[in-house]
Image (cartoon, rainbow, N blue to C red; front, top):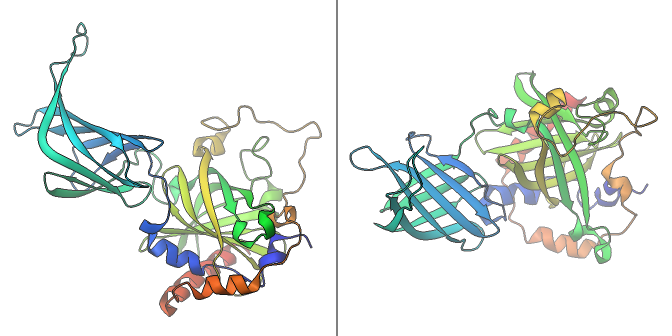
Length: 351
C-alpha cells in the first residue's frame, strides 16, 4: 500500500509526543505574528494597529493624553528575529482635519523612550511602554470564540522531510473544511470534512462526510486545538495546533484506526492558512480563493484520497529516528492522558 500511514505507522504509530512538548513551550517554535487591530481586553478603550511586511513592523497607537484627548503615536522598524520589536515612539500633530484642506503634519520624538513588543503567539503579545507592560491580542470583532473562528476552509502544508529518503516528496498538503459547531456527549466541537474539491464544493458533501469527516475540540486551559480527521478507511490523521485568526501552526500524526497513539515519536510539522471564509462555506458567497462554484462536466468528483496514497513506499532510518526520540523530553503521564482523552472523544464523534 503506497501510504503515508503504511510508511510511518511503525516508527510513529502516531501521535503527539514531540508535538505536545513543542506547543507547551510554544515561544521557541517558529510562528508568524499576524497583522491586525490589537487591544488589551482587560483595559479596553485604546488600540494598536500593527502591520507586518516581511520582517518590517509598523505600529500605530490609538491612545489619549493626560486630559483625555486622542493622540497619535507611531513606531516602525525591523523585527529582531521572529517576534521581537523595539523602537522609539513618534508623536504627530498639526495635520489635516476631516473635510479640511490638506496641510502637512509635524512629527517629533514623544519622550517616552524605547517601546518593546514581544509576540507570544500569532495573535498575542506583550507591549512595554514607559516601564509599563500590558498583554495585547488581535481584536476578534466578528469570528466568534475559538471554535467558531475555525469555521471556513483551511489549506494545510505538511512537512514530512524528516521521514523521507533523500527528501523525496518532502511536502504534502491537506484541506480542512470546518462547517459547524455542535455539542457531542457534553463537549462542544467544531466539525466538518476534508473537502472533495476546493473548486467545485464549498461545503461537506455526503461522500466527504462518509469518508473524510473531521472533528476538533479546543482545550481552553492550554490554548490548543486538537483535530482528528478520517484519512481513509484504515487510518486517522490527528492535528495538534496553536491557532491564530487566519493561520495555525503545529504537528500532524497518522495512526491506525483502533490503535492507541504512541506518544514517544514526533510527527509532521504543519502550517495552515485560511483560504475561504465561514460565510463562503455557509452560502457559497464571500471571501474565498475560488470565484464561482459549480460541478464539473460529469456532475461529480472522484472520491477524496488519503494523503498517504501520494507517497511512494520507502523505509525510515530507524536508528536516526530513535535518536531523535531519545533527545526529546519525556512527557508526563498527566499530559499524555489529557491528550489521549481528547483524541478518544473526537474518534467517538467520527464513529
